[in-house]
Length: 227
Image 1 (cartoon, rainbow, N blue to C red):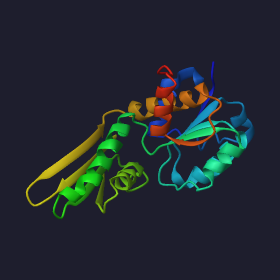
Image 2: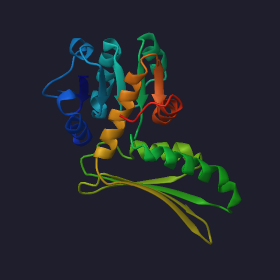
Image 3: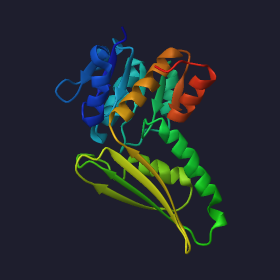
Image 4: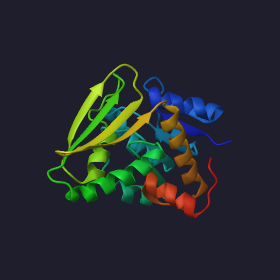
């Protein structure tokens, strides 16, 4: 049986641990990881707070294991791909592990490319999450702005126990177009991160850092069964 480290036991990390069951090895502020303990694992899934991210990143590089990285609010270094390759491993990094987000990326990119068809379009990205979420705007909202490739206003709201709702609105003088992604349960992100890590483990020859989209396409091309 594979042993998977779950680093960070907040809302999403706890959902990961619940789905993994006996496969999970939990690490948090009460049980801190070190390189030696991480080396005993097949891989790790990371949802830590931004202030812990840099230290965890270095420990994982030292441990030389496969990683699904879901922490947002922390900028990974440009040299990460090189460092992961030198360690002989592969990471998948995503601001949102919903597989449906790949479809949203395509739609948002198309919206940005076709914006020249409109006179003076205005773009608004709004995101709503639970009150305990640390980063604002969310990593997903920042990804949406990057995918759009157009100037956009970003509005953030923290309310109750909202899992995550993101909306892109295109406004012109005569019409409004809206794209929305609503996560109804954190198991969405947890199951996506688990599946992504299993794909890395399924193909041990992979090296470097992958986006979720790249990894899904690779798995599809190689006909990997869903985990």
